[in-house]
Each structure stands twice: as structure tokens, then as C-alpha cells.
Length: 239
Image (cartoon, rainbow, N blue to C red; front, side, top):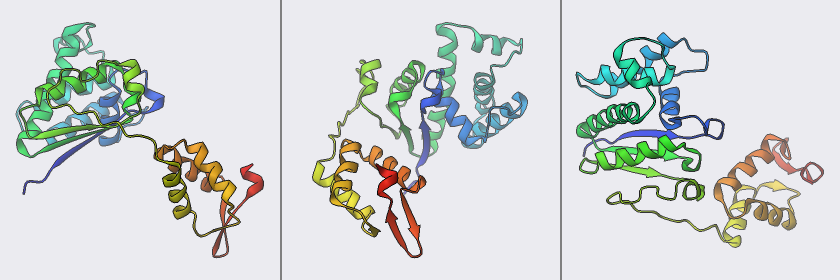
């Protein structure tokens, strides 16, 4: 059995208007980059990441292109100028190198690309995902992307015409299922009334992610707090 190579990509609300936010977030997390990381350091880390994950003579060139994309390099060399230039050719070069990089990984072991928060990706990231889906269709791999239905509002043609693309629409949790989850998580919490459980279920609107985040907020804000060995619900703070 071959091991699977997994690439985790995500979009976040704060960078939703930034071009190529999927690629940028991937590089930030995998290369330990922060806003004030010096450009040369960032480019070295990105190049190292690409060459470590893709054993190919072209890996360094791919790393250079991604480094230029991330740092908005002001170099005057011809490759940098091509990447910076507005228009189809610039995006085509970025897409080409990313697809070659991912294709190289897919030919070494099955590749799983996981995308989270699809509703917050920018238009160029949408185009990149569609480009990768087409370029990698004959390789051993899969793209799994999850998000809210917002993606269909802003990108109605998302993955239209891409072979083997399947859209799975998950309905909201039923009220009974939501209530059961809340009861399981908060079963050891004292002073927790049925009306509070109903209120939490209503606020989550059947969305398990919202439910998890809302319950986390209750703990973080000490609405639910530990006293000695027991957990207690603070009704005053909640309402």
C-alpha cells in the first residue's frame, strides 16, 4: 500500500480578498511565515519546501516562482517580470508551475488535496483549483473541497465541466440530532436547563461547525466554567 501525500489548503475570512489566498495560506503554514518575515528568508523557505516535496530538477524553478508570488519581489530579472506582469500569461505561469509541482508529487504517491472554507477563496484560487482538477485528472489523486453554499453565489460555474466532479450537498442537522450532540458534550455540566439546550440548538441553525464554535465560545468566556471537580453553567453570563 502506497502512502498518501496530503496537501492541506484553506482560506480564511481575513484574507478573502487577497489574490491566490489558497497558495499564500499554504506557504504561510508550511514555511512558518509571518507578515514581517524578510523577503529573502521567505523565498528560501518556500524554495526549500518545494524541493523537499518534489524531487525533480525543476523544483527549484517552481519554488522561485512561488517565492516571487508570495513576496511580490521587485527583482528586474526576466522570470520575475513575467510573473509580476498583469494578464493571462502571468497567471498561466503560476498555474503551470503549481500543477507541475503537484503532478510530480502525485506520480510519487497518491495525492490528496484538501481545501477548507471554500466560500472564502478568491477568484484566482477558484481558477487554480479548476486548473489542477483538469491537469491532474489522469493522475492518482483527489481534491476534496468543503465550504458553505456561498461559493455558488460568487462562482456559479465552479468546477462546471470538470470530469469526475461530484457535488455533495449536506443538509442542516435535524433539531433532534443537534440537541443530542449538545447533551453529549455538556452532559456533565450542572445547572443546564432544557431551555438553554434548545436556545443553543436554535442559534447553531443546524450547522455542526457553528455549534462547535458556539460551544467553544461558552467555555472560553467562562459561561461554562469548572468549579472544583464539576462544570457549572453561568445563566447570568449566557443571557
